Image (cartoon, rainbow over the protein chains, first blue to last red):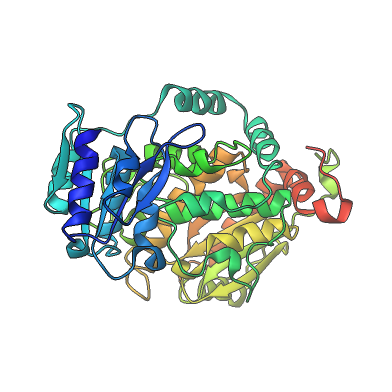
Length: 266
Length: 153
């Protein structure tokens, strides 16, 4: 951790970057911190407890400013950074990506290609708990599944924390703010909550890197990350991409193949 | 579920593309083929334009079933609209099924401008299927929440 602090302090002190995005000690778990001076870099921490996906800030111009910024990235954050880069949302020249390896070494990536090579060793896998809920849902009848989700979504009060936490939800005008026509009712109701989550999942289809930030951010603990996570599992074999890897040849829903297989169209 | 299915007339909304299925449905009429009157046709420039939200809106406003139909692959007026649509439906169908929404109520089909008879057949079988399934009360309950001010599963 000292090495990480030294690295961040050095970058800030010699003016290479104007800000370092990282984690500091929080109440229960580490929280994001924005270091603007070398002194602030002494607050930085890094552990497996760092679950916030810092890539979410990289598309926020008011936070990033015009200068160069360094970000301390976990594996899920690296995945998000890559996906943002294939969607042309990041400027490689204005970003320094740093990670801490398994061996506690501080690694600075020269470019996005290097991140891609590094991330290839870390396969995106379903965690035991996620797999358990998915198995449970798949074992249910359709009616039971509907009941499960309606029950879960009845807790939703439309805070849109899932949207705010997601690095790939970077539209400046979201469909829920769209009111000509009003696609999704702005209030929290079973229909509106469900429609919102269906929209969120569809807009993430083929783009989501499975970081789980949406589910972690949900204040009432709805397992909404499973919607996008399940889609990764289903669509990856269907459309031939690797879970957690950026879709370099275009996102699943912005490309097509003449021989896409289906069995439900008459 | 409504047990008295013999009296139940399904409400079906068909989202069709202008160039193939709409023309195909027109041909059904000019060929004087009779088919079920339960279907309300909404014309779109292309299947690629048919947003998945439109299907959900149809269900929310009382449709019991939905038909989505357009040009056969490689026949799209805009070259690739139906290919994009096909990917979207594959994705959407999987998601809906995972969320427990009845995907049997959405019938996708390719009907060309020459397939008037196929259109009649698609509509008739869809109406028969939905009649079998009954009204989509499960979704209606969710959609009517604000009128009733309570939601009981």
